Image (cartoon, rainbow, N blue to C red; front, side, top):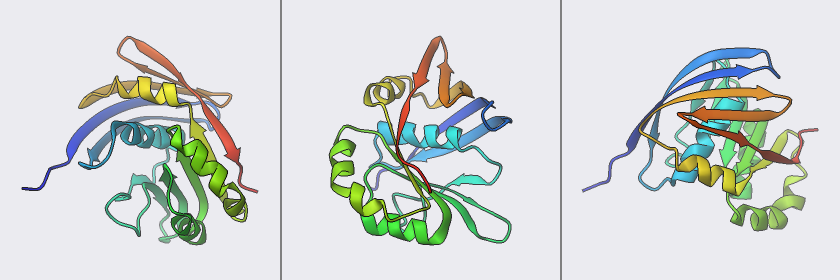
Length: 180
C-alpha cells in the first residue's frame, strides 16, 4: 500500500514592505511521503519571500520537469523557477535555461559542503541566485509545523519575521550568489 501525502493548510498574512506586496495567502500544500519537515518549511519560506499572484507549487520531488515553486506568466513563459536543497547541477542548468530567473534555497548543514563543491560550476549561470537559510532557525520553525496554521509574515529591509501562535522568529538567509 502506497503512503499518502500529508496535507497542510496555511493562512499567511503577508506584509512585504520591500516589494510593496500585501496579501492574505491561503495555501494548501501536500507533503510528499519522502519530503522532510525541513524541506516543507523551506517551501513555505520560499513562497513567502517570492509571493506573487502567479507563483505556484510545482511537483518538484515527483516530476523532474517541474520546479519546487515557479511563476509562469500568461504567455506560458517561466519567469521564476525555485529549487530547494542540493539539486544536481544538470537540474539547475535546466532551470536556468528555461526560466528568466532561478533561485536555489539551501537549508541544512550538508548544503554548505554541497555549495563548496558546486560554487565554481554554478557561477556560470547569470540568472541564478543562491541563498541558504540558517539551520537552527529552520529547525525551530519546523517544530511549529501544524496541519493547519495561521502565520503573520513581515518582510522589511531584507528581514523576514514570522509569527505563528505565540512564537516569533527572525528567518535569516545568506545570499551566496546573486543574479548578475
